[in-house]
Image 1 (cartoon, rainbow, N blue to C red):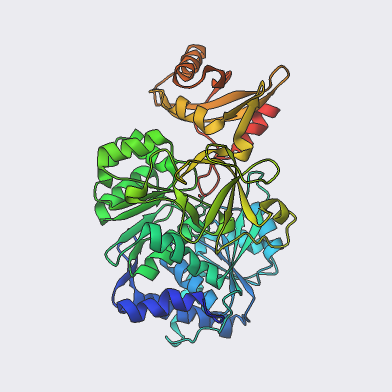
Image 2: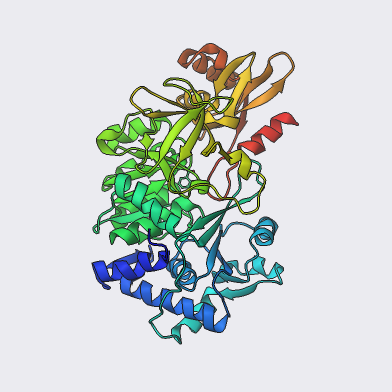
Length: 498
Ligand code: 3SK
């Protein structure tokens, strides 16, 4: 990348010249459409509101709080154009969860959808502007704005990540990082075209959503369908009604779509992407059998901004997550940081154009070890260089000296016809060190009693090595998930440790 680079110029000014101002850039289910030209105009006007009315100077941080909608994209680009730094937050967070983020990132301005202004009033250091007011102010501004001449390695984005304990870490990403995710995953794996309409259930505040709905579509001249929180069934309806060609969501949504028997509504998809969690093989296979779709699985991290191991089309090897995305290298590390050979499971290490930079955080030294970004996932690499997922490193259960990968047990439980979903954790046990404890959500109308627990245990013993079976089964009506839909396994661990 050139030394001077403003990511927003590359994401909107350049596409307007390349694809024309009239192409649709953003759509909403309510029928609103913003062209590339309109998005550029509004981003320019937001930049002027920030600099002229709110006194933003380059390097200052601007917190955004909103569900996915067109004004958030304009705000995102406007902040960057004005030389500011975007601080992303999930709309679902409340004052209590916003407090450590605001304290750590110290934004001076917040732009928020009017429905989400209230929780921000708790922070006297913030000038809070609602989108309603932003629109009024923006309408008075000229449509042109020359982006601030930022350096390629000026920080553009501060993205909080909750981590498994819930204590937020703030990842910092440069202007060049924002473009880099397109030059790696976007161009080489996803390959959007101008004809694509992309939908993604992840909020922009989760960098999976930012890439899928802002960075990749804008750079390809494609259109993004922006939806606020939607259930998997609503997503399937939208895909069908709106003619979505590319869907990106988490395995949980694909599982729920299959469970509800509405997968035929995804029939118009050209591409489907799964990230956020490992997709069980059973789910991948069923989508392939029923729709002919080869879902692109991917593992990414907020620390590395987006996906770094994945595969598409004929490169997909079912059961494996894929190979390092072009631009990245990956390895499997042993307990002492040594690189392990094929077939040996260990901690995943990744190096590429984007790496982890926590804002003032001791945990940096745990994440970047010997130059590798150590993501906290256990994988093995096969002879052909494909990476196979085992578990989060904190999701290996050691019982009587046996290493049991949690996801493997969950896949076995989920294959029981009465099970909707499950999550397993290690329960401390005097005799065995720990035992596998399963939290199981049953399908509607199925009774969770001791007989059903035994049936599930026997089913697991028949499906995988019997020593891996859950010695304890607890029935639940749902599993705890965070605002981006990730399972909060730490909440389950807390229950069994009490
Ligand atoms: O969790 C993931 O797999 C992920 C994917 C893309 C971007 C960011 C994340 C955390």
